[in-house]
Length: 131
Image 1: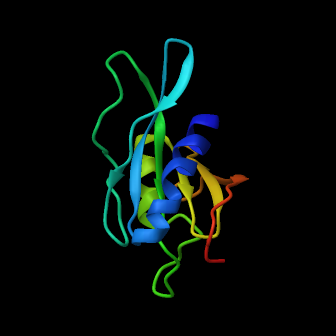
Image 2: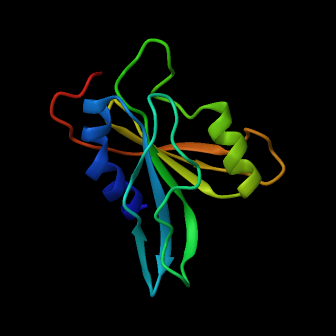
C-alpha cells in the first residue's frame, strides 16, 4: 500500500495540472514493495498495461493510476466500471489518486463482476487541488 501512495503522490499534482491520467505498476521484489515510473495517458483514460514493466522476477500486485483534473463530464472520484471489469478479470488490485486528493484501492473478489471492495486508503496533500 505504501508504494501505491508514494507512486500516486509523486504524479497526481502533474496529472491534475495537465488534465491527463497516468498509470504504472505496483510490484514486489526482493522483499520490498515498489512501483514503476508513470506512463501518461489521456484526459479520460490510462493504460492498464503501462510501460515500463516491473523488473524481471517481480510479483505484480496491481496498477496505480490517477484521474486528471476535475471535470463535470467524468466521475473523477470513483473507479470506472471499465477499471473494475479489467482488474476483476486479472484478479489484481487497482489504485487511483483523484483530483480530490483521495487515494482509493479496488480489491477484486473472484467471481463477482464489479463486486470488489473499494477502500479509501489515504489522502495526499496537493497544492491547488480542486475539491
